[in-house]
Image 1: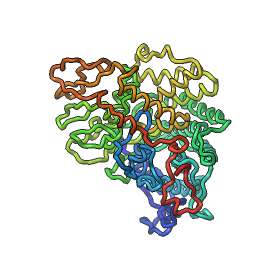
Image 2: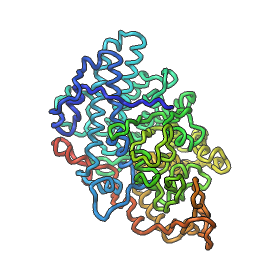
Image 3: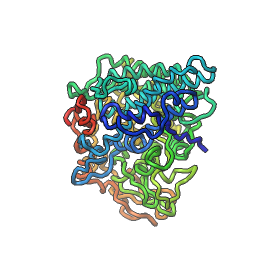
Image 4: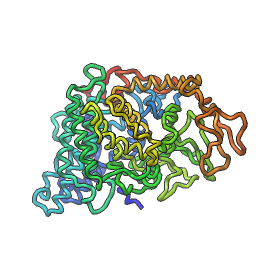
Amino acid sequence: MKKKFIYRVLSLVTIIVVGSTVSCKKYLTENPVAQVGVATAFSNVANATEAVLGVYSKLSGDQGYGIRLSMYYTVDQDEMVGPANSAAPDNDRRDIARYGASASNAQLEAPWENLYTGIERANICIKYIPLMSAYTSGSATDQASLKRLYGEALTLRAQFFFELIRNWGDVPAPFVPSADQTTLYLTRTDRDVIYNHILGDLLTAESLVPWRTAVASRDERITLGAVKGLRARIALYRGGYSLRNATATMSRDADYLTYYKICNSECADLMANRNQHTLEPTFQGLFQNNIDAHTLDPSYEVLFEVAMGGGTGVADSKLGYYDGPRVNNLGNSSLTATPTYFYAFDPNDLRRDVTIAAYFTNLDGTKVLQKLIALPSGKFRRDWITNPAIAPTNLVQYFGINWPILRFSDILLMFAETDNEINGAPSAAAISAFNEVRLRGFGGNATQANTAATPTTYAAFFNAIVSERSFEFGGEGIRKYDLIRWNLLNTTITNTRANLTLMLNKQAPYNNLPQSMYYLNASQTLVYGNSLYAATPSATPTNNTKVAWVSSLTAAYNTNVAQLFTPNHGELLPIPLVSIQANPALTQNPGY
């Protein structure tokens, strides 16, 4: 059984009293819930460890990657769309999915505050851990432990800032505890300044945090692979496009290749250390046998994950409940694949039926095929959960499934992408990295994966990367931000709606698809009664049930996908209104 590393919180007086440094003075008047001061918190390794675990804790739960950062903010795009829209704005998750959020949206303030609370906690640890006498004069074991904790705090702060930047752009950037600041009314800092700072922090952390083989036991704490992988990802975004507050346009710096080279170097280093992290042999096995089975993957493909547990919104996740297929009609199934995403996969790509679950499950375990417009995201699904399993009659909504922030397949594809950009065409090493990911997706069948035809020119290889990242990371909260950093979000949304219209009108390349599908009755596995790639047969297959397939598409559905997206606006969320009102130095994002 997995060693579950539930983040405990040692609530320092400084942390609890200050809370958030950028939005509201009311946090300065709250009573601390634990009377533990910094002198005690940083008096020994055990207490300092508890303090850093308090930083980790802000990753999990409803306001972190338990639901909002992982599933509310990451749709709509060409892969996954959020919950069905209502006739009127809901000032909630539907508006966020449709790019119609206002500054008063109910789902903005708490995640924003949560991220800044994480930063404040990290800042306190970053200040006080190096001041501990044991940091420089303790035993070798204590010094190594404290240096690791210091590096973890730097890395966690980088992740919190990265999440703020990719959702809100330029943001206030406190790098010292609130108690040390001359004012709590912070202005926004240019994101590139923040990026450069945290890239430097992560480089420092690389000398402090050990490789995973150097620690005695494995848990969900950060090791060197996570630090290097996160530094690669952040450098890639630093070199990418983003919506600039000053100009209200999408742009990237002229020196973007400087950051692509950082990303490439970090990825190359990770690829040279396959004894630390590599690909899990099968794509489905990673999710079904490890992540959903509450078991750490033996190949260490997941470099950085958020530990979930406890069964509440404070520290757990709704993965598999909010986004997966229903069991006994329990669950939301609120993230669904676009029909064009389903048909973008090669028929032999095994990742399709992992990423997209085409069924719901009855109480007795039999499967029920869903309409094409209602196929739920499938990597985190209740009927795959084991160790322990969730009974089909259990009403719980929190399943303890960890959120994978970074996987080794991303390292391979980031390496391939940056190599192509730096050299103007992919090297043999880039092609090999690309093919390694693709080949696993096809179960190792090189003929079906057509790896021999992997493009060798710059533009074609870039387009292949764009597609392959979609097939590999669908439903993992990555696609929307990839499209933004490539400045392809508007183009992709427009093309997706156009392709959905072609499918609706039975036009090429969708003209030979079935309008209805059949599936075998009372089967424990989903068995199609007709082809997904041919017209619906005139005769009903024996012992099968008919379900609307392409015929479930409507013009209203097509319009609803990213319905309110506006370029040079929708790439960022609005700063929460409460924070704007509380901080006169804080300005709003373009168009809000």
